[in-house]
Length: 289
Image (cartoon, one colour):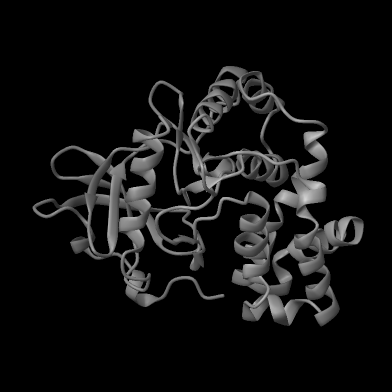
């Protein structure tokens, strides 16, 4: 899938009004927008996320999610310096993570603290965005139904998903979604980051974890845990510290691939059959559907 186009190239009007860049470097971004680290004439260094081809309100939703994580959940997030129609300017931190147990233990405890904030319903007060696609967040008191409808079945009609899987495979995914009450213990709705993997954790000057690029809603805590577990390169220290605060239920590792289906289906919906996710999806379906 094409993610950005020529309209997403750098222009100075992505900066806060009245500021000028002295230099800039392109950073690795997500699928929706370009990212630059920019030195400003006033001496500050900032990160600018910009994209004129993104949907209206895209960066406002991201700013709202970052604020909710910080103000409701107490999760460290970058300071928002400017919100424009087609850009979001944040304080500049580092993506070079300390490979130390204290860093990952702090990250695990921070996510556990976030998950202490509960709701009677799963969802959010508005739909969001995951990558370039809508994230459905309609309120539902039933967590199994919410995950089935809005995190699995919701992707099955996406054109690239339909093109990747045979009709019987799509029906098998629907059957698997209907089996969630048998496979996943009932759990409360908690405030989740929603797109939590190693690349969405950065570090501040004190080498403490800071969290970026959320897709916030209230859902199962293990949604965040499963993405950290399944996307790799996350030390055991993270999970040990997390589970000291939020003890696991049963054999939690056995549920991780199932709960990570949302992320895998989202990858196929964005990038198609060659993204690497289809074999992993088929493996989960063959074992559990």
